[in-house]
Length: 213
Image 1 (cartoon, helix red, strand yellow):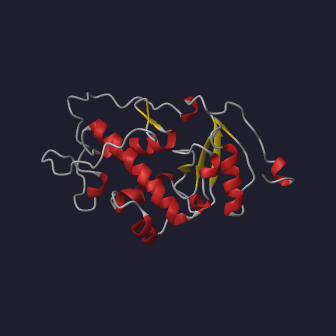
Image 2 (cartoon, rainbow, N blue to C red):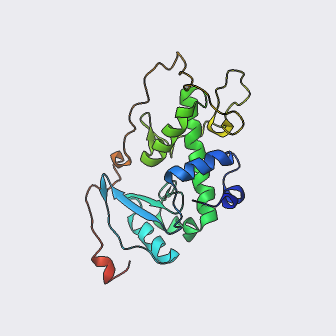
Image 3 (tube, rainbow, N blue to C red):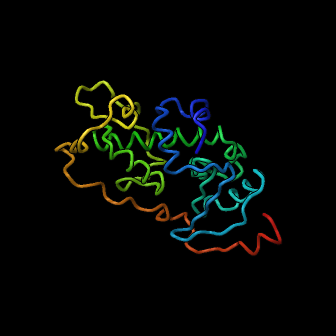
């Protein structure tokens, strides 16, 4: 569990701390050197990094060829990067990783809420799923434009995740608007549909014992 003081000090202020904390509970880790690499549905096995420099070397090696997630928010390291050397070791510093990860999740959250038309409770679960897969309703959420601040002044606004402490939910979640229909959002497409993603499984466990990148 990420310390609440770190959330208040480093998380994107555009998100309520309650939302950030729930986000971290769902996808976060206490290991600042956490690193996962996937090519399609396959996991690329690499030796655990012992230092930020070792972790950074692995990121630079695979970013652009596979999905690389790093740090306490499992931030997608390739987002907005044109050249691997642009990626810095700060991705493995907890405060910097939390700042970047919460800001990007905030955009994903706003995209999903705008789709629903209100911050309904189920929007949070879909935002977490979109964070994990990189897609929502067929769109690549990490590169989609940010829809901007949510309208929290509407008299018809439904309770959001961040409102739960002040306004505990009662009964069943409110129904979705008639304009959206009753269908749940279609299952997001996995990140591996990006043509830049590698399609082969690479097991580097043995290689990592004799030579580090």
